[in-house]
Image 1 (cartoon, rainbow, N blue to C red):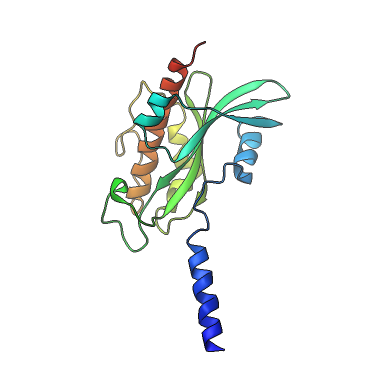
Image 2 (cartoon, rainbow, N blue to C red; image 1 turned 90 degrees about the vertical axis):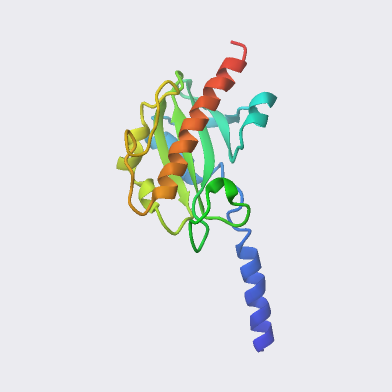
Amino acid sequence: MKNVFIAILLVGLSSFSFIGDEIDYNHKTVMKTLIKNGNMTNPSFEEILLPKNIEDSYNFQGKFFTVVDSNDNTIKTIYIGRVNSCRAGGCSISNTEMNGPSEYFDYMVCFDINNVVVLVKVFNYQATHGHEVTAKGWLKQFEGYSSGNRLEVGKNVDSISGATISVNGITKDITEKTKVLVAIKNATPH
């Protein structure tokens, strides 16, 4: 009986490491946020395929989508992606050096037609520290950001004690993905 329990426990633990490995692009919070905060009533998504030169230049853990609201033809662009946070047990190495299991959070950024950030929402926080970055009030500071501006933690982005890795990660990712969106739109024939 004890061996059966240990076998079940091992199978359960091994399958646990695969839970959440993929970003849920259809997460109910994404749709709910677009309807409630994006002033949409019936949004539909279409993935934006990246030009090869952009895909090769950046390390993507997410996708860009065009979102159309069928009731009024409102078009927005969103990015749904993942930011690696601390490894379970410590944050002694940088995000770029992580090659094993890490903690993470998934988030979305909504852009207007001028590539300006209009909304940021963290919807799947799987890290044990730094959950303060999920607060609406803290995320509002990214609204109005465009690639012509500069985001810098401690200057125009509030730092959060105990959430340094998460704060720096999301700030860097929003900066990068805004620049990528501009590059995508510049590469696409009008």
